[in-house]
Figure 1: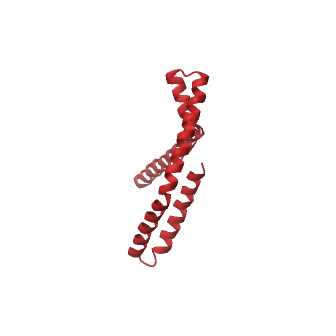
Figure 2: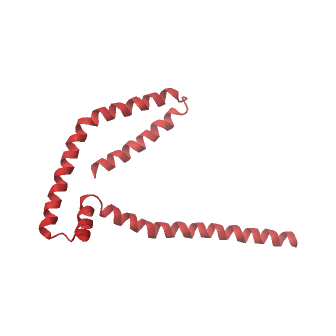
Figure 3: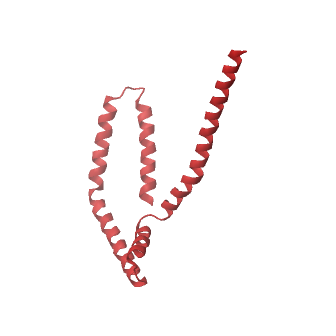
Length: 128
């Protein structure tokens, strides 16, 4: 009888933990997921213009000028980055080759899959 009660208490405790974990996961996805969506919608130059407009009380004319400045700056960044992109890629590939050389044959396919995933993510970020 005492053993059954102990097992029952432990079972109820474990079920409570599981239910709590599921509840936290759902709440996190709903609450924090919405916040992440808001941040991704308002990122980059648009976010900066909005923040500076609020903090500095920019006029509509100043907002337009700020947008132009940010667009030009972004274009200059792209030009600068395009000149170093080949060197960055070469360095990346050399590092990957060094990692491959230390892996076992059974680890190589897993590493290649890992690289595929991070390359996909990089492409997605670059498209934005």
